[in-house]
Length: 450
Image (tube, rainbow, N blue to C red; front, side, top):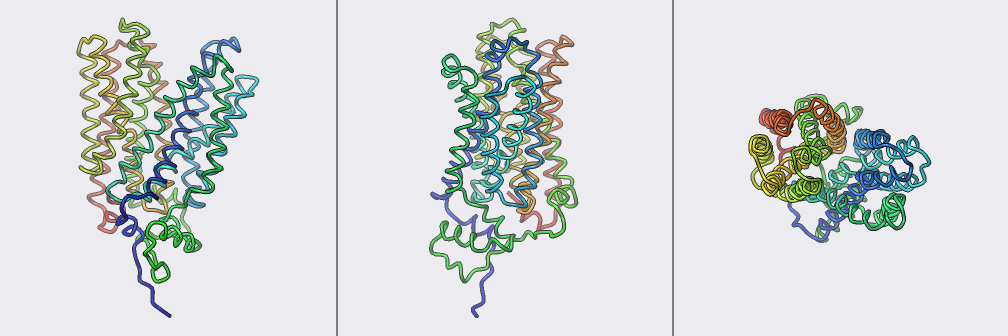
């Protein structure tokens, strides 16, 4: 019997050049996020048509929007543990099919109550698919491209949201608001059929499972046909921690401090982003700008965010995640103060908001890149998904806090200055995570270093 050579699956994956296999993973993840972005913002596109069709007030759609966000949060909390137990591939497939079916069913909702329930169920699938697509990509990405690959995938969300707006402007006048939900349902279901044939399981996940050897050998052969898999035993420095759930692992030592820092950081980041996404056009209009100008300012926020999502991954891979996150969040705070204190025309306002969007939206994605790089394989999906789920409650809080502050008649400057508080807390969270990494054991630093 020939003795097998033990090879770290992490080192093997890091040593591979970026090739066709990685492009496939990147395009799959990007496509999943495009579909997610379309379906998450679908209600925003169809809300005016529903109000006109059902003859209801704006407030009546509040439960529909809230239930969708709650579904996203709960889906993320559930999807991570399921992926760590059953695999990333299976959860992504089921999640895409599920949110496709629920979106399709939403098109035939007869009442606000039914539509609210259907949007909650759609959100469950969307919440489970997003972080697991990012987790799968991070586990295949060579080390020097890891953050870039994750952040490029998250660009799919803004692309899907933007594409949905153009499609809605064409379809709704001809086919009605239901057509958007039908498209948001049929396309994911068809896409899931293709995913069944092309979506691989995570090699790192297979390496920590007793039953994953045969499938792991097939994937290794695709990445490098010259490897004789029969003579190699692929191992991981991370144990499976039998008898412990991944949820327990992420909140116990040595991960407790980092987990809490990630939760607080993304919560504050999403609170800020959704505050701006929900209320920026109204804030701008109330500051003596026209409705058209307010729409342009809101659009520039998304333009900056898309550019930032692409750039921050490269920056984090090149200069280090903690330094880049602190610098970018600090810059966001500076732009908020500038917006609060300077008297600007429309072009100056658009420029500063674009820069703010570049910073605050990109750090939103940066938290995911940090989480997927930090957590060991057996808890990576859970750690990333729970961070996302907790962060979603920050999104809900941001929209609500904005409504409260506007009811207090806070002016333009006061509102932007108030946003520096969650940004400062997010900076502190990055610092705490960085300090925890420094004090971790060498084995843990090596396993989770980025």
